[in-house]
Each structure stands twice: as C-alpha cells, then as structure tokens.
Length: 257
Image (spheres, one colour):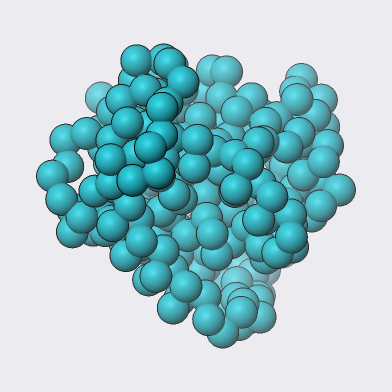
C-alpha cells in the first residue's frame, strides 16, 4: 500500500501524505512522492499541485526509527543527499506545488514544505527544525532554505533552540503565504490552485524556470556541506543518545561528544 494518495481534477493534482500516525518521511514515502511527480509529468495536463497530510499532521518529521538501521557516516550522507535531490526536484519542478499545512510540520516535514513553492498554513500549525534536540542536524537542506524565508538571525534562533513557531508567526516572517482556520485551509488552497490553473500552461512552466534563478549562488555548495555534516554528526555519541532518547520518549543526556 502506497503512502501517497493521488487524485486530479480540472488540471489540479492533489497529493495526500498517508503514513499514520505522524506522516513521518520514510524512504518509502520519499520514493512514493518521486513516483507521483513522474506520473504528473507524464500526464501533461496538470497546472498546479496541492500537497497535504492526512490526519493530525502535515508531517511531524523524518522517520527517526529508520535512521537506526544505517551503519556509518557515508550511509547517512547518502540519505541526506537523496532527500536533498528530491526536494531540489520539487523546488525546480515545472508545475507549482502548494503545501497545505496543518498540525505539526517539523524537521524533514518542514524541509519538504520549504521545497514547495507556496505554503498555506493554519493558525495552530507548529513549524520548526528540532533536530538539535536529538543531537543531530537538519539534513534535507533545512539549514539552507530556512534563512531564505525567515532571515539569518531567526533561522539561527529556530535551529539552535529547536523551538517551533506558530502558523501566524510563520506568515508574519514570510515562511507562509497565507494563514487560515483549519476548517477552510484546504478550500482556500484549492481556490488559489484554481487561479493558477486558469493560466496558460506554457507561461506557468516558463515562470517556474525563471524564479529559481533568484536563489542565492552558494545554495548548492551549502547543501553539500550540510549532507557531509549530517553524515559526520550521526557517528557521534550524542547523536546516538539523542535518537535513543527520542525512541524511549525521555530527555536526552548529552555529553558533548
């Protein structure tokens, strides 16, 4: 059974993450997203994509338990690079992707949302990169994308403290385009998608190629450095302690090693 539901109507595709209870970003889910993007490209009629999560969360983060199956730094670095590759594909996709976010969007979930072109959130959404609380670091280009939306100073604060921000604050900072009540957020996102889908597909595709050129010139280099650091950090004693503490639902006892 797949982790992504796909439906389309009137040139709009809706992708729904269905991986309860937290919609954690497992390798299987990431693969399913890639396959759905392939399907959308082959379709040729889609002009806008909505990405949302089923249940209580958009995505509460990466599948931490899956991390424990990896053996060495190169495995973790490869995992980081694969995630970055997919999220880069989303950011450079020829069709706009609208993330409709409710509940928790943390860690890898926020990194996925930041790769999307437009983010619509609910007021009670919690958005953050809490990886340092587990003794690890963001690995899907979170250190590179977050400063572009909230500014360098706020990115330092969010990543170093691990504290999430609300949907309302995300909107004020520019991390979210719009904020709505949970009961209406999907309807409002569909209205936006319909406005986009009313435009000519060739003009949409051209804009999707042009805007990414405004990205900071060192983004790719920074992402490579993040992947390398992601691999190195996972070999540390604190990373092992942090992940084990997360699995055991207790506070980690870091030794700064």
